[in-house]
Length: 164
Image 1: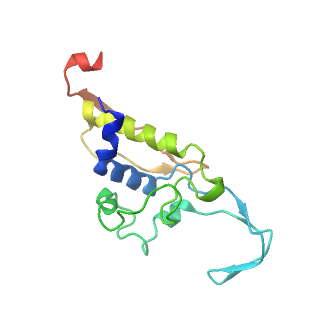
Image 2: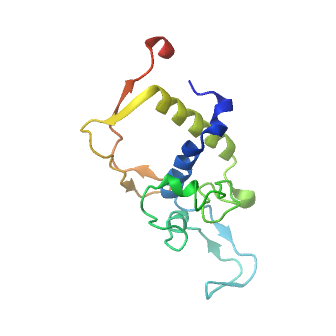
């Protein structure tokens, strides 16, 4: 199974995770913030004390930042967006927020995602029940969840003793 030391070498896996978090951030809206002083943003006057929400989903699917923004293209994080990370430094990809109020579980969550996905991809062939594409429609809410259950079959592709 996947070793922790091997995870840093799996660049395409990391690109898949970044692209997944870009298209389907865990929370479509960032936590509320409040403006400390009057300011102008995008030509709009924002008075001090205004509560602000960042629409992360909209930001991460902006066509001025990403070509074909609604398509799943992990290769963009190996080429044109190679130096972008999800740790709050690049505002075009902030699925866990940014700054002092970003998600405190980001490191654990990313490590768990990499380990779980690497283990599943290494040990199983994953196919849909009908052989067709997976329905990725979302249900609206405070967090992003699939509108319909994921229905796939996991077929072992390693020797039986590995799974024991």
